[in-house]
Length: 571
Image (cartoon, rainbow, N blue to C red):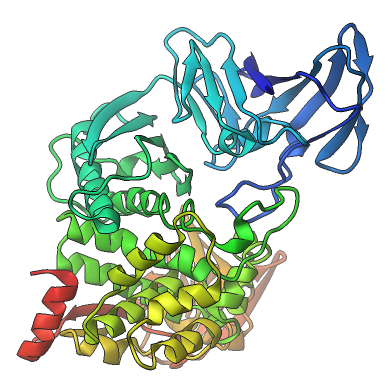
C-alpha cells in the first residue's frame, strides 16, 4: 500500500517535506506528479516546485532517471520498500496548489503526491507530521488514525484537499449528511452562525433538487474549506469537499442586515461548487474520465458542466429564499451584459471556447475578450434558454438534469447524450440547442423572457464601456487593460498598457469623471502616455459598444406570462 508522510520542513520558507514509501516496487518503477488538477483546465507543472528529489531502497541510494518534466524512473530490486523524498515549495495562495507559512497550510494532493505507476488502484495513506501548537487539520478524506488518513486509490487521494491551521468551524446536517464549514482568515466580527444557516439552506435545496424531498446525497459527509483573504474569489470542486477563497470583507458580519451583493456573491460561490458535487464530479464528461494528468484533456462540454452549473448557482439562492426575484434578475442581466461586452462571442462558439479553455480561458491576456467567450457566462445563458423552452412546453430543465443524473450518475456522458436529454419532448429544441452551442449568433433571450413576464432594459453604460475599454484604476491612475474589437477606443489607436492622463485638457483620476465635463457623445481628445511618450488621441464615441443590461418584471405582462414567471421563479 503506497503511503505518504507530509511534514512541515520550514514554514517561513514555504517548504513541505513529502516522503513516499512504496512496498514491493517494480524493477523499473515509474513515478509521476500531475501537471494539472481536475476542475482547473490549465497545465500548471506542479513538478517545478519539487526540490531535492531523492530515493533509497534498504540502505542503498536509488538514482532516479528523469524521463520528462513530470516523471522519473527508479531502478529497484525486490529487497525492500522504495522510499522517495522531496522538499516541495508551497507558496500558491489559490485553491489549486499548495501553500505554507507560519499562519496556515493548505495542499491538494496533485501538488505533493507522486504517483507510483501500476499501483494507482491500491489504497493510499497520508500521514501528517507534527504541527505547530494550536493548529488542527481539516479534510474530507476518511480518517485512519491520529493524523492519518486513507483513500481507496490514488484518484481519491488527490481529490481531498487538506487545510492546516487555526480555524473557525461549524457543522450542520442536510438530508442526513453531515456538513462542515471551516474558515480561516476572517475578521473578528465574522458571523459564522449566519453563514452556517444560509449554506444549510443552499445544501438542502440542492439535495432536494437532485433527489427529491426524501432523497439522500451521494456522500455521508461534506466539507467546505474557506480561506478569507484581503482580496480574492474562486473555488475548486472535489468529490466530498470544496476549497474556496473570498475577500474577507464579503463574509457576513454580526449585526449586518439583508444579503448584499458581495455576500450574495459568496453564497453563489458556495452554491456553484456544491452543485458540482453532482454536475462534473459524478455526472461527468467522457473526456475527463481516466484523463492523463500529465497532459491536456480537452472537452467541448464545459458549456454544460460549468455553464449550466453557473445557471443553477444563483437560481438555487433564489429557491432557498436567500435573494429576491429582483436580485436574481439583476444577476442574470449582469451575465448577459458580460457576454454582450465580449466581441469574441462573434468569433468562437461556446463549445469552441470550452475546448480551448486550456490555452484561452485559463491563460487570459489583453486580447482574450476579442478572441473567445466565457463558457461559464454564455453557457449559463444557454441553460436559461433551454429552461424557458422546456417550461413553455410543459417541462423544465430541472427534469432534464434529473434524467441525466438517473442515467449517467455512474457512467460518463457525451454531447449526443446531453442533447438528447436536454431536448427530449420539445420539438425543435435539439436544432436550436445545436445553434446556441455551436454557433456565434446572438441568443434570443429577449423574446424568450417576454413570454415569462420579464423584459430586458438597456442600462446606463460607463464611459469606458461606451468607447470599448477595460481599465485598471488604482490610486488615481487609469491604465488600459484591454481594448475591445470594433470599438471607438480601437479606432482611436488606444492600446493595452496605455496610461490615461487627461481628457480635453483636464487631468484624470478616473475615466468616468470625464463625463462631468464632456459634451454628451461629442468627440474628445485623450492624452495618454505609452512607452514614456505622450500621445494625444482623437476619440469618437459611437454605437459599437454593447450597453449595460438588466432584466425586470414586465409591468404589462399578461396573466399567462405572470403565471409562467411564477412557475419559473416562484411567487
